[in-house]
Image (tube, rainbow, N blue to C red; front, side):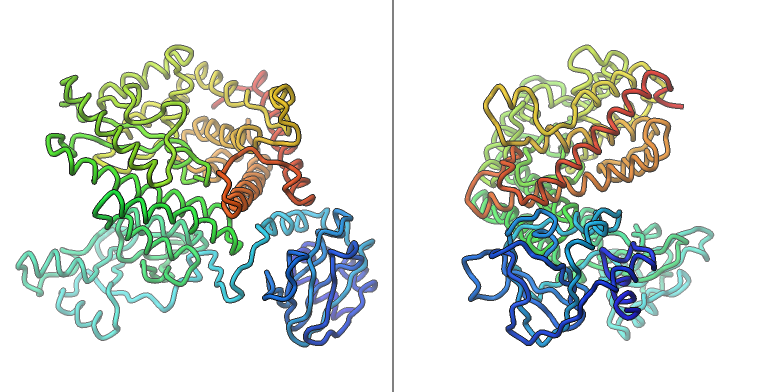
Length: 613
């Protein structure tokens, strides 16, 4: 019994149970040996009566009752749990399980495990098991954080070394970089010297290799914290065009270095190759052919069980590359237009790097203040209309509400944007002030001099305008989390659920407002919720709940849209509830209840406490 209790305690969802609970569970557990090929359970013929935990060997799962002859859809190893979907929903919905090797399993009676899945660890376990029932490669490697990509000890040098000495050291160790602690330069952090730096800053410039490393290195190298999702580190490398990225712990100590090549074997690593093909496209036809593979790459990440935030980050990264290259190809056809006089900005979910397969492309442009001739601005807008058409050919839909750079409302000079933003801040009820504020707060420049950041600075001062902040709070909370709206009932859309409008957007709105209320410049929803956690309007617990809920909703949303892609249906945020598994339906319903509870609390508090300190 102790052996079984010890084993269960090391594997989710049992790892959150107290020792006494584990021993009581172990006392009701039966251990059984099964031979390779022997059926373990068949949830398609009857409701599963025992939860199965694999103690040794491996078990294959088949998610469809029509095809047991081929390879399994999933392979469960030691610590793997199966049968919970059938037990919790009391339906014969599968899967079929059979031993792939001689294995040992333990069987836990259904009557004894309901409390396990009612615990916090049980809920997290279920949320993490949301997936599309599709075949995946058993050998697919799942990489979660940047730590998993570190291959060896980082190579450290000194700023006082000569470039010749650094080059010899890099050659001897077969490295393309050298990390330089800034301690001896009187600063903190790290500098980096790479092969590319030596070629560009020393050899090409005709400088002697006796020059000190400290004079030619990048003195302020970007770093990433241990534990950072691999996809986030990949985005940073590609966006900043880095050859290497030092990995540091919370104390600032160097733990390793990762580069673009380290991501090739990771699930998101194929995005490196595809992004390169997109940026290298020489014609609109080549760009469209490459960009149309974007949704399939994101879908494959979902099928492999990667977190939804990784799939959405990769999708947004590739969308950025497609927009950049599309703009370049169009401007190549308009040499009369000064490409250095504009900044292209993405808005909405793409700006937050939370794009899903159904996401539209919201965009805006900020012109240099020297662009004042109306005829020149009209010529730019014509070109931007061509960009819209090219992106549509690439499979990217433009915003149906007109938030596109080809619209006069979204193409202004830097000065005009700043003046308009200041006006919206002072009078949010005029000139679509609240709508435009929400759009521009979720903005990220991807081309040009990033001049629209000045607009973000205008909105960062919203804490000094509590009346406006309170109006924005009321607007954010007006989008209620709910399973069905009256419009759904009247339009006859029974049995459907708009997961974006009625679940995801309420969380996004709370996060956006919460970040504004504490003066945070974070963009993505999860980071905004963490930044606002602990404020009077959003407690630590509320923030943690909303982050978990957001992850669950995005997983369900992406999984459903991947299933639509597989069925050659257009991706949609309107979900037919009967197409979800009973378990997924219950998780969505619980998520909506959690969001609604936080909204009610914030509405009540808004009557009594200041919106900001």
